Image 1 (cartoon, rainbow, N blue to C red):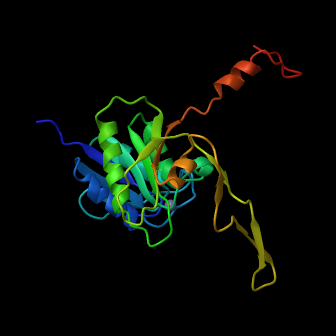
Image 2: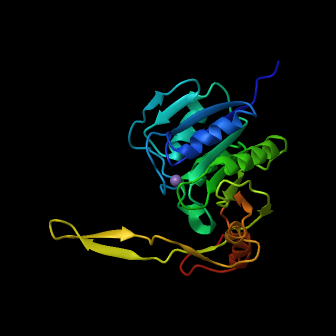
Image 3: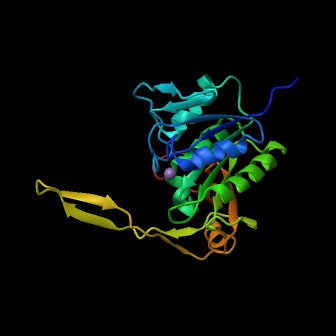
Length: 256
Ligand code: MN
């Protein structure tokens, strides 16, 4: 008899976050679920990998580990060492808060799925928009549907999906759109305050972020109450720019 499907789940909100617990439980309908996740919140660490210090993985039950590292560390360690076999799918999330547009470059959630995609595995990240308290139920239904879609199709290597789910206040999500990454307005604020010893400290980013409308974007879809699914290519090479630059010289160097 063939092995049951194995699905690896990770995140950046930490092993004990409600989003990953809800996700792991829901994906249990599709196969065996392993959870390897940071032992504390690691949001916004992007593709951080721990190369200069040891990592500890602590067993937390059957196919469950916490790791004192980043989402990338978790996916790497799970796939290369902890899991009994290669997972058929890797899912990262469900993140508390959206990962839209350029968020993918900051996101630890997206990074966890990226690590799996780089290793040739099927992977997606999933994030939930909205204000607390968040109800992850509707997003788990989206996660299971996307997981089934990926498990049942051939998938191009070094690609992944970035899924964002609107805040429906517990109501079912009824629609989705295939999207492109949108344009977020980060505000680019720096708040400067003084510490108790009279030295300045700096706090990056505002509290509420906006976005600019862009046809077909993930931001627009989520704002319309749709789940947004954006395919990402891990090859960041810009083909058009490469072609445009191919006859351009760099002064002082021989172009070969
Ligand atoms: Mn997070």
